[in-house]
Picture 1: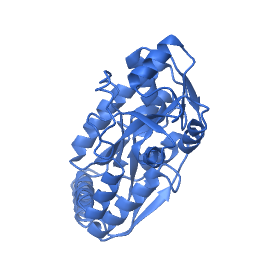
Picture 2: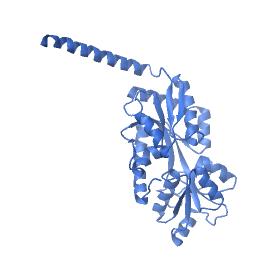
Picture 3: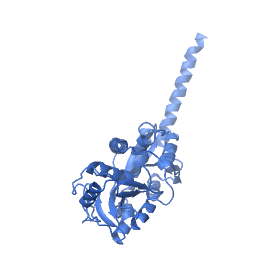
Picture 4: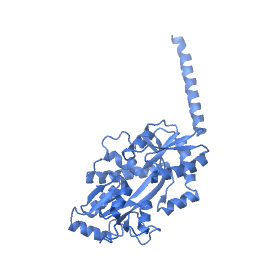
Length: 327
């Protein structure tokens, strides 16, 4: 038996070399077939629309079809877990959003994926602020008006949201904690339902993404109070920031970017990153994103990873202080 050992070792060495060569070829030849793009939300929403836009631009750069597949549910957890469990070969990627990447690990005690260890950031696509709004008939015209009323009537003012743990609610919770006030959360099944009840005068206020809030503001169906970005938006130059109102900690940007399963080779991540950065240079896409009040993303995978890490720490603290529990 010992006489066969050198031959066995030689065969193992050959197999190992062939595997390494094949792996290297596969990475250098990537992509050579269609790529699946998972969206953890339903069709027709903001995340879905942006995913389809960026997928179409990237498919031109990569010269391969990118097939968008919606897997909604559980606040983005179902689709995000699907990405995490996929083969790390670059042929399954997806959109990683604010809640499933930075909030849900703290919010859900039984999350079946870990954003830090099961997923690899590729690139940030965009960041967008939220706007605090009230009904036009409301007596509140400034942040200070709302704070004064909330302190005078603790627990009487209400704010709507599109559900537990999303950016609508978390923006309000951060505001509550920063201002030292008490308000009641009224969750709805969707952000549009929360806006509808705000317009009907059934709740006091709501934080909503700028792109979906703008039509109602411009139609005078809602009154904008303040924006959660660090600087004023050129689309609403007269709308003050929370920092200007005296609450600099109320800075919220709802973001999303591309992610892949952990273990996806760096060469493939770099190729996807380059394709996304090239796609984000498209004038039509840039104009659309800016017209919705969003900041255009881009940059290296490490930049997106750093954002996710800092956001996870920030919102973990907010969720714990507010004692938010999933539905």
